[in-house]
Image (cartoon, rainbow over all chains, first blue to last red; front, side, top):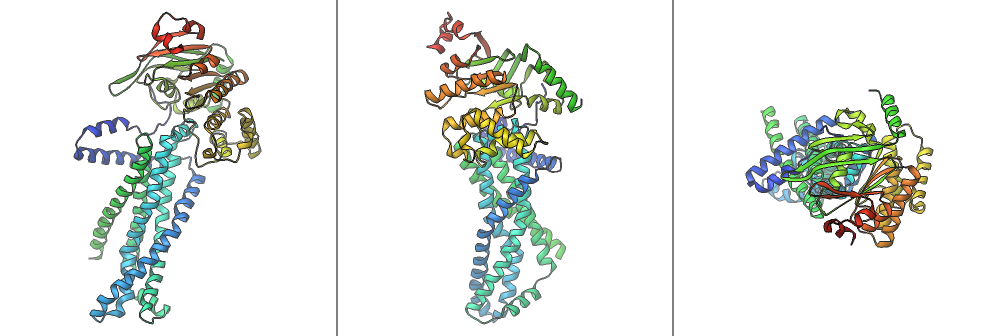
Length: 272
Length: 258
């Protein structure tokens, strides 16, 4: 008999099989399941109707609501990195390199990665818990019988919002991180803002900015996708909600490091 | 088939008397668990059919198959006389718009207010409807279930009975021809259960809906049922009115009424 409507991707039976299998097999089945989920995302993302209102709402919730946390974290990172690096550079008489070194560190690596990890903790777990809770309380089923494609409405909007909001947050975190560094430099010195930023821009080039910016789209995509996947397919029950939130953060954080490693390899290929 | 032609066909079929829903040899399994083995069921227009059975006998699966939340493995399902296996996606969506589903938990959207919960299905299904029309439909739906005052509350501020009534209002707002109730009185006190049962009866009388009511609550069955079907081991084991089944010679069937 033909399916009445587009269903949620059915993997309940897969889960039952997974429990019986070894950890090794479980890992590959999970990867397989996530791959199917990702392909389903790409099939749905370009297909009308588009959920613009929900996308705008998620963009606000995911981007704007994460802004204070990201800003505070960025400032502290810049400040601490500067204070910690100063003694080492001072030993080599290279204290004047402090702004340049901190800027390269923040923009190339620490800004994107730390912001992404904070983002995974806040947004990834939030998406995982929210969708899992909707699953448990049959809200996703209710959406489906209301003539709404829940995958498009819930998953596509959140993944797209996470993909485009994380790079914006990283740009702000980098800027505030550099301001934190300026404060750190001036704790034991006297450098004007103009001179500080002049040194920074002298030390940075396109190869520092562009790859670091591009990889944040992939970080955001991975965090949104994994949070949605874990929530959408959580096991029934309240225990599943906690599990979905927890595994979203763990898995998304791990993916951030894996993507970062790949991005660094690719970047170094082009730079050499 | 064009949307207008489909709508005309559905409307014509709706106007007819006789069966609105027919299941023939419906089967559904989850792995080795054969939940529905051979279900044959006919629901007539304007009729309330209560489905009784022990937990895990596939009562909820039965109604989930009707709205497409579960896919039957085998068998035929006719809705308004149309074999749904022969319909394309658009035609199925059109048929399904005539079916309302009240979930066991109410399945209210926690992130939305009462008003937004009711507006959601209207906005999704009636694209050309104006804001004023939406508001008057929302007001009417809330009035029908006695929740006029709760329009700006969130679901978390409502009691269990109010949540059930809101779930019912959300389902009824599109005026479906077939209503599917999944354990509508579970988790409610006897007084609220009776209120919900009477509300189901009121819906049937007011909108002439045909309903399938999945329940363990025998008082609910007594109030709402025109006919009762008892499911045992994946098949329809008994069928009749409340008074007929109450006097059944089969002790297993009688045990539901004791």
